[in-house]
Image 1 (cartoon, rainbow, N blue to C red):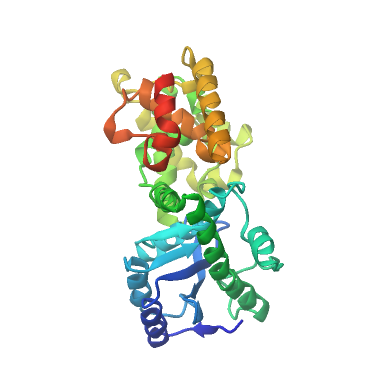
Image 2: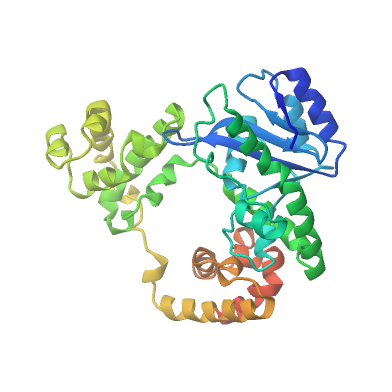
Length: 371
């Protein structure tokens, strides 16, 4: 397994120009995400079948040749379990690899579990046992060790033959186009628009609050999200979600009350004054401007019966296609469908996953008949 370390713009330009002559390239990233809001990129692995390159983005000033490769419509980018890799590319370069396919999703169309790891597939299809001991090491530290470099290189070196085998099998069973559609859907869903005013809806337990309490939680959650993005810190390193809910639920609207209730002392010291200022403003919001009480889908009349009916249809489709039920339609996707019918009145602009792409004929039309 021969590879080269790319540490300047000229080298990067050469390997990317060469890669753009290929029909497909293998891609992977190594990153760190412990305390930060965004994943921190440490290394990029690129393999076009001839050249295996380990690109060091920490020392290269101009990454535009790589960005051009990511955007090149004539080159298929192949990744495995790429959800977080997509976030890395979007955050670091403002774009996503396109077109792209995820071999984990390809494997799911061949009957593997939805979360089947790369090492497991390599062992099954290539009879090679990979060393995964470096997966949690510090990819931002320099210099990288020989063991780290070998580990990183293996991830794309073995991805090439794995992709070839999966592609052959998936074309035989007729799911190749569906795998491409599912990969593109993953890309669309993974990159979310940051909407601070809706952040309160993601606070666990917010559904239990009254509109008056939600009027306070809403600006607090918006502030927390904005602060996390601005400082590039994980949300709970700004202010713990559970503490935020407790603060509102128990009306802890003084520094003393927050401390007495056992909320994180450092967060109170750092943000207590700001939080109390937000609470003070929120208390002045007119009643007619309070957010609506959050109504959970599962609390609506007839939900359990409808969900059970839909689940039965998923099981039927699973037997017919051989695809796992959770891959055909997860609980979240079924709820998305029910909400589309009940709350959005089948709005064409808000079509759920099961009513798009390959799922529409396999499952969607049958589900629609049940509601």
